[in-house]
Length: 312
Image 1 (cartoon, rainbow, N blue to C red):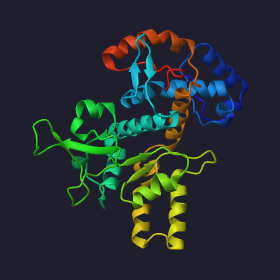
Image 2 (tube, rainbow, N blue to C red; image 1 turned 180 degrees about the horizontal axis):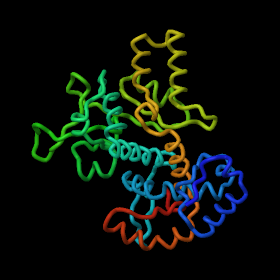
Image 3 (cartoon, rainbow, N blue to C red; image 1 turned 30 degrees about the horizontal axis):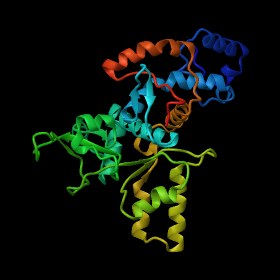
Image 4 (cartoon, helix red, strand yellow; image 1 turned 180 degrees about the vertical axis):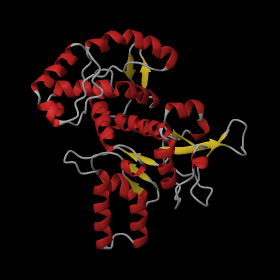
């Protein structure tokens, strides 16, 4: 497998010829850097790289939203009143939960510390007791219904085995804010504007305590930076108190602060948005695999999402 990793290699005509042959032969291009300038200049190549890199994980995340189902004629379809942007936001919530659970000792540790207001990093023994769930995800509805709360002010909470349970059906208990009995949690935002209305005002109204804002705008400005600019202006103009300023600055977090890779989030969002809007290409191998994947989905909840006209 040839890996595109440097400008020198990509500028080599022989290397580009090799890549062209890989595409023609239907090889896996997921190892190629989606952020490289020559990849981004080639829409077909970029689409194929993103397809190979994110298709399977996006399928998992999209199914977890509960808005994707197996259609009567065997294909996976969207049945949702959400806009494409909102649906992708739901998939990103599942993505964050998956990333936390896949790396609890790094991402999970930092997320636990931040959202529970702990001054010190939790030890391994503490971290290992917990796992993350999405309060609005299908898995939570099916396996942890007591904690299923899609309209709550938190999208992610952490559970551990309960020492004592109020009911035999509830075998887990949530991580609490340090020194309290109030459950800790994270609100996730996948927005490209209106940070004042979507993040700042709800936090000032105590609707959200901790907000993980994921995306960068087209000009490269991160939503978290926009939020901090708003906070500084409000503080300078007397629109918020010093206590409120500290609350906002502590409670607004970017992905890299808890160990998530911002570039991966950018690329995942790009692919997911294109898929939902029906713009991501399906190669012949992908089309040939639909029948197999639909069969597998019936038994393991894995499958092919078909975008386009089925999105409501």
